[in-house]
Length: 222
Image (tube, rainbow, N blue to C red; front, side, top):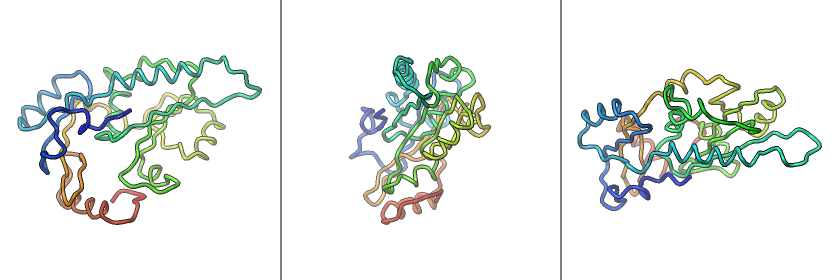
């Protein structure tokens, strides 16, 4: 899924946008949260075309349809679907699409023969083994069929950062999923451009820019 706001949004120009520009995104159709944030930040640029609730829903249905049980196999298969996300504002926005208590896709999702669904997004810099993606929590798994052998296999593949295990959602993931709208801001410094959480401090931004300029790869929060 190509989720780059600089590619999708007509009102967000990569050349003219300024450092610190405030952005607002409505994750699901809930005007109360969105209007409250918009009132507090009337200067914010709205990301009108960067919400992927419907697109994620469609992709999940297509993935589940591929596992229709018609493939002949002598052994029981572990069916894993992958959704690769290209430059999203955050992987946490997909928690809202999945687990929001009012409109989360998970409530009505037809898993069919799908045992697990993996959400995957790259970091700014990555090692050849993608170990940093695992350590940073940028690959997360919904393991519907939580048998021990399935969990052992997922662990071997480094796909055991669970946001769903059986029918249980971790508390921090569930709480994050209740955010119906979010604020972000543009980081444009020293030739580096990114979209970051609105509450990121200046010290954190400077540290992040230093990391981007360096040759090292991060394996945990910086």
